[in-house]
Image (tube, rainbow, N blue to C red; front, side, top):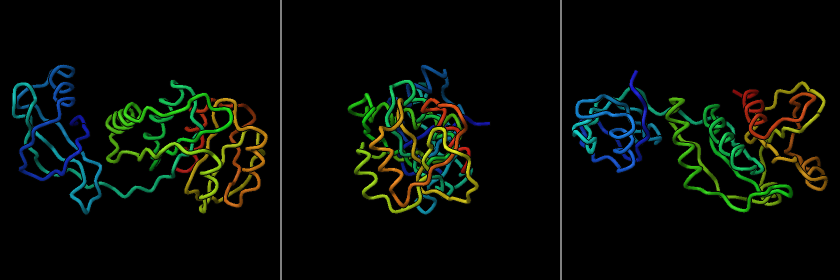
Length: 227
């Protein structure tokens, strides 16, 4: 099985490419690959844009260049829900990004809420984690990282079904097909925020059991319901 690497480029069979310095470093210095090594590159583009995963052969001893081979598969349509999440502390945030990618979220919507302790997002670091998680899980798309929003702003434009992972909510039978999944930050939502959520016509509370879950655990438990 060829190891997968993300490459932000249009890929075509027979194409000769100079690889980005970061990728050269990973291939040569970290993985100890060299000329003649076989790998697979994916670009996350739509199938109509030649998006997909392709075989490739490294053509330089220091992994500076590669030749693109056959297409192994076209990029599948992205159908997973958008994860809207109250931004937790760094460890839980980065874990949530990885797990959301592995479980098929189409996009990540970070939210600023009353109990959030994070004022801004390190987008470069977050994007790197999303790419790494896609490579490791052999997913062919990268979730879109959306700009940080307040909860109020998010709710004001929400016009599609959203499953809210509400702690200690009684189990309900539902056939909900949510477009969004909403997870609170560490400490949950404030009483005022809960009132807003309960009053919103497109917010649907779902049960995750009788215990309080970590933010990143709730991401897994909620997304797993809609795989």
